[in-house]
Length: 364
Image (cartoon, rainbow, N blue to C red):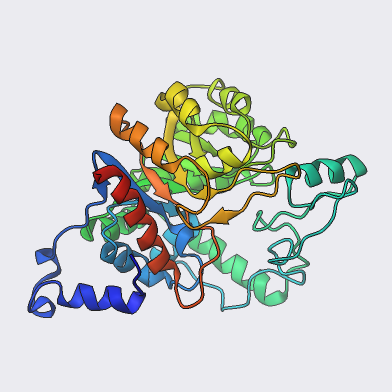
């Protein structure tokens, strides 16, 4: 199925004669549960080109009824001050290595692959990581410092009602907020960890998902127990870094910490790391809070694995979804759009294609 955002808007406007004159509640509620499997989306999928105010209406147009909400998107929808475009990050760009740039490790493998990362770590040259909480940022400008002070004041003034208001925005559109994605690391101060759990409690989510490290998981475990809130580690494909949740045994170490530690399994990354998500899900389904669904290729010697449009890679998406359907697993399978958006398309249209791909599998 091929459609653009303009097509989606046209469909939304003309799906029912006289729609523009009807109350929003008269519109059919979105429903992306297919064959008993809840398909959702992490709002990270809309990170490029989708204004924050359009996240909810665009999800509703796609018929998505479940969301994994990124903390920054949650704050924006709650009215947090926003930095002017281009104002984030100091000199150095703040996003690690530039898109498309590939460094070479001493063993000849690309540095952004596990083989390359392993070799560079041994040589003392650390690889750049994109989007990792300020890595690669230069000194803050006065404007950035002023913005951070303003944002801190805003955060301090938030209450449970702040986050309940965000949840209501989604619920009014027929979208359930299941998971809060709040990425943190060892440099995250204690008060921000508390803030993350307060946000999750206000939203009424069942878990916090987090791209982080083993060391931070050991630290945050006490907070999860304190707040009686599940914290789920998100996996990546770097099997050479013992701090990453990449191998089955690393996830097993995580869930052994206490009963509030869970798993956010990214089946694309897990496959790219060389492991079978179907077998892992069967074994640990009771500790999985949510999946991230993407399609990647299997690695070669240097672990060069690509993110591809659904159906173009070899990640066992079909097998995973059918396993969920067969065993009636209740955790959501959330689409995470990471492949290159083709010319003439946009994130909303591409997520729509991913939804249709999953729906076709589950309703066949």
